[in-house]
Length: 481
Image (tube, rainbow, N blue to C red):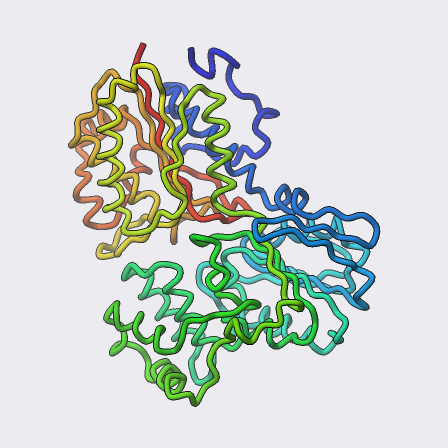
């Protein structure tokens, strides 16, 4: 018996975070697996809603603040500090700040929240700034300078809460002179298109910045800093989240040069960028802040949300729906097309398993894939993965008596440079491909995966979700009774 037969269709009250819609709603009426997949993804997004994460992780009793997170538990004596400041940066900043201020707003002397342009945030005494993503502009420089200006008001017995989430690398920037903002942006764009992953991108960003790689945290010394993170990187690496403005960084100028050379961009880079990196290698420019420099009594780090929270929520609701959930990995990296081949092989093998007669499977993974862009099309890593997986599943010829649906979702609502969050695939699409004479290979070669799914009507649309914990992939399949 299906989940819908057990419970009836989900209602608005049953899913608190109904963000996801499919671009052509006809598929909801025609395919139960599509409805189930969307419900599972909505449930996973709700689990990493920043307000929920903050309120779950921070508990206050009078002057005592308890913080419970993946990196430990700590009780903070707020009376030990003469001043308390708050700085929120990244895609989740407005919602993190709102929940934080509902708990501690009466004790915060001053704060800054950096939002997306036209982002919704208002709180007495807290300054709202706007800065874009994925690429910075002059507003990003202004936001960095406003945060740096807080130093004039910070005394030794001050406590600064930094609420940090993915996207902050673009929202606050201060390039090392003579590197210009445009030069830095163009290099990062080129690295992205060449297939560099987030860790590689951020190593380069840190070594062309006055504030990243722990430099911002060092600037506010000797104040105490408490970082509260929503992680958008594999393994919750504190050297990578938001380019580590307030923690530390053990990469080097030489590492940044090797990354640029790896993607054959060194010779094409502006002289200013090569000059800074070469001077850094020679020791003429100070390295990023290293972990050995940290006073760990003055710097506390807490990760309150990550892709594991989303994946486990997806697993829990899938189990309630009658699926056997399998979390394959929370560290998924690599080229999207290559991963699609591996997924297709696994799905084919499971589809032939005798166990499928008695089990319905929900395969789940988290991580962030990459795309080496060679065409001029429109798409991102999630839509490219889905299109490549569809191609492989057609090749594998999954039995017609198996119902299935796959999805790949950017949890922040933006799949790379697109306005879509990802895509869904299911058997009915194959008939659409035939009737509309669509050549999947051509769309892949031109990196035009989103255009394909817009024509099919199965792109995922959310708008900005207000959170960011990398990408979530889901594949449901069961044998017809």
